[in-house]
Length: 374
Image 1 (cartoon, rainbow, N blue to C red):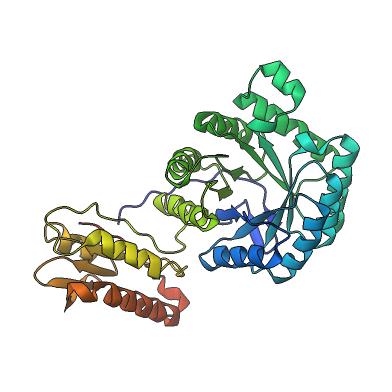
Image 2 (tube, rainbow, N blue to C red):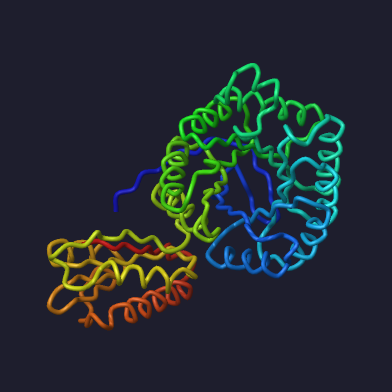
């Protein structure tokens, strides 16, 4: 199978909970809860859903001391590392560090005086946790807004470097940086400039990207422009949608670039009048049923005989549409499947394949992924 290897930018490695970021670690996928943090059960339920489909890290907004105390309860039960999102009140950052935050996300531009930033940095040192410097085009410092007149890539980098240099002065190096903008090219250029100046890991994102469809497109374009150049160590796809969708889109971006093979990789056929079964309905049903799978699995769902046999032979599991539909396993024809049995049979065979893969010796090197083509 055709494969392109993307050389990664060499970056310093930090640790967020048990997740390594930077260096040779896999690019991690994050999301952020949108529940009321003080509602501990609702927030935990969302974190658990995200973790179930593969999220490596989840960020939680902590806007008040009440929310900080709730975060302490959430942290005790979270299945994944948690980053706390802090704005304006540095005392909240100090409190969540005491309560076990795995990383402090601060926007130094709105934290305030240097002594307050210094206190946050010292707390991070004392508790052995990293910081994310989060620079955003929508909240640049007033002097930079005056200097540049409007947000620009250089303004974002100037803001980031101001705070990076301050952390260097405090001999603190366990941090990652983001320079986000909702304008794709501004964000991309800012990240490229910053990547050439520091060796800290970079958190990629197109902020306030929009709703599910438009936000996914903007994020895929912007993040891929950077990832294809080896820039980026952890990503968050920002969508005005269910946070679970952010995780799915994030992994789809990484899988498309061969940077991460975690989870189901579905390449869906647009379908046409040649199809012998309803490809779109089949693929949608499979996606829903298999979203809990974190192993890399490859299945071809192919609607007709034009490309059917050839595509199915490239996958570990495949259906080629025909009269009747033919199941392929490990590149070879296996058995016939009626249309009404397609989804059940594909799910059964996928899960059986994963079970066999887990039982195989580690040295076997076998991986599987999902491909739907017609």
